[in-house]
Image 1 (cartoon, rainbow, N blue to C red):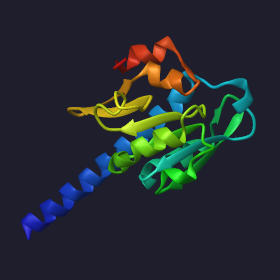
Image 2: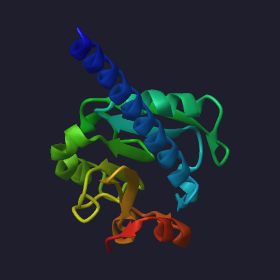
Image 3: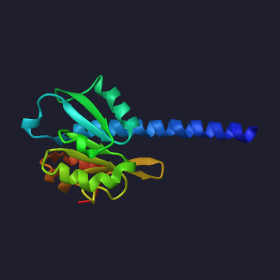
Image 4: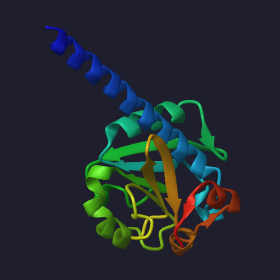
Length: 167
């Protein structure tokens, strides 16, 4: 009985820790928008964030969208399982279990002024602009300014100073 209780408690702690990590990722994503400059022609209507895969991140971003804006744009979050649904997003987050879709996403969004954020080591070197990496118990991110510029966007030097540059 004690082993079962310990297992249930451990599972609860790990679920809480995972939820906290997803909340931090959503906050990072929102803060990335403050350090990326989109062209004037895409700064009207909603700021659209697409999430492929991880609905926990989408839910956290929805919470942020209720009270925050990107510049003067309201935030709209779209959650899907396929990259095909996200052609008109300003930012797309590709969760760790969907990284096999990165090549397709890069082709689909080539030159569309979309910031691509992934979740996994070395993915910024493979085409995304920013990628979350786990360093022990710390959440960090890789940034490839060259990939961000390929999408027609500009990143602040402050963002590069906070991340692991892979250019």
